Image (tube, rainbow, N blue to C red; front, side):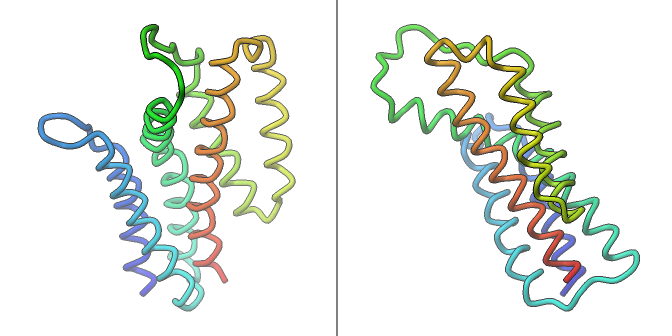
Length: 169
């Protein structure tokens, strides 16, 4: 069961980077990655603890799934939020500078904090990110992007790290 969980975790990371387009709906890679991660979480919770090499692979795959999976998740959440907002859609909203890189680093830090048994690290990561972005957050679209992107990113990282934690216990 552990091997199946590890395979699903790897597939969740890979599904998130499948390029949308050419007949692939934009939301499909995110939905596939989410479903694979959910099944991996269920299997990890009922499987016995992974030991040795299996545990190490589970930790590495959890961090990779956290980092890579959010790369597809966050833009999908932005599209859903834009569709449900009251904006007219006339002026395109520019993403915050460095958002992709900061998001990957944020998800890695959150996942590693959880897997290391130090959840307080999440507060430090979010505080540093908030302080670094503070000058940009005065614009309403920037603050909305910051909040939505951070929530989606952190929740994805927590889910991926949760699979790794469940594999080890």
